Length: 115
Length: 113
View (cartoon, rainbow over the protein chains, first blue to last red):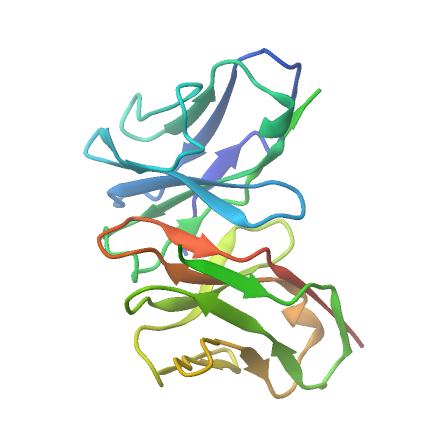
């Protein structure tokens, strides 16, 4: 089965630094998402992206966050100036349809540690 | 707002034991309900879903029934295998016309031979 690929699997950064988390969604999918899970907490929706623009974002997704699909295959999440509380597992997902009842395909995640 | 509560883990079972992982939800409207599973080193995968009250989702021997009266969607399997060891996430669709899924914290299942 095709899969969503995320790189790197682990990222360690210093507070205040910029990080870019990368994802390659499944090739015929049109909708892209980022979720995150802080250790011991719930998996939280960050943002959805369709047709080269943000479709929906949560209140977590403030001005420090941005997403981009720079080349038609990659989908990136940038955090401009990381904070300690940004430490989490970040999951990328993609789907063929927007309907949330339909299947999302998730990557295996990037563990971000902010020191 | 909509939310999901699932039992804390880890749940530790012997092979062939009966599994229940509890999930309850709070929601307005008529959400769809899901169980996703994450095997070690892999991404979350849709295990099963139910889109309306009294629907039963099933896959790979797992079942869950959408119970509106108790706002629950408990995951069950009659006889677990070592290969079922994973983290299980209950989720529901957000409010109408939203892109997001609302997840619980996940429950780790460990099955020993």
